[in-house]
Image (cartoon, rainbow, N blue to C red; front, side):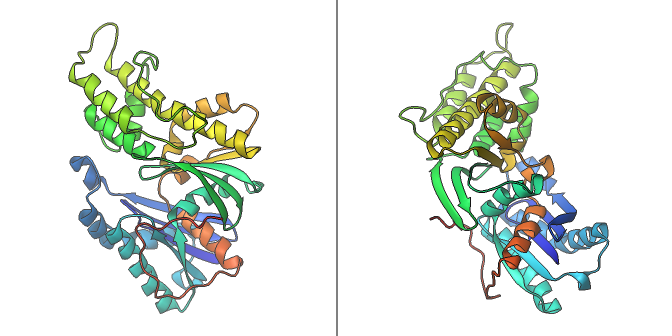
Length: 331
């Protein structure tokens, strides 16, 4: 079975081909036009998807060595994400599916990030804890089985990825903020500045980053780089504050659910400090990180989950629409 996956939830035009659980191609076109704005401009993102989708689909099919007529089904991100960008991808996918007279499977973007870990290790078994951490979401999930998920905790304000983006802006760094701060933190002392870690008491599994962001803003108002504290130190300390919160809450979730496996999904999963600290803190727990190509938004996770759902007998009416605030089903 060959599934074509399309992902347009934000500013990555991504297409992948999956055949019987194997990713044959994973093509991503990043919209660099947003860099000059310091963040994603929704209207521009939608227009860029319109320009790029035909090109990226053609390239992905070529890399997979197949023709469009070989595709058995199309999977597309339904949400969550930006309304306009989601609609662009869904409209394109509907046209393909109708033209080829093949099934169309809508996919939850968050669920796809979680299932990307099955691409890393097909032996992954239920149940497990998942830390889903990206620009728009910071959540802890107990994944008990397919379509059986319990939300353990989430952020009350900013997501961790958003905290990285806003922190980078305060520090005068580039976009996206996560990689920019990670690069700036190289050689810095993560203990040079003590930034707050939100909601760390009472065994809470929820997150908060607004206080951390405000603390950095006030600190930089009076900051002058000197011998004792450099900008690298500030970036490293800020990054460590975000990571400490993520790792501590993940550790609590594993303990409270008595899980033996924890997976980390989403764009922030690419952060090296998070990977190192997670393995140190949860030394006796099996921890899985997706490959770097599967951390940020990508078509592979969409095509793979689309195949999983199709094999499970999942069907839908082609008249479904974009759902910018789509949630994961809980049980």
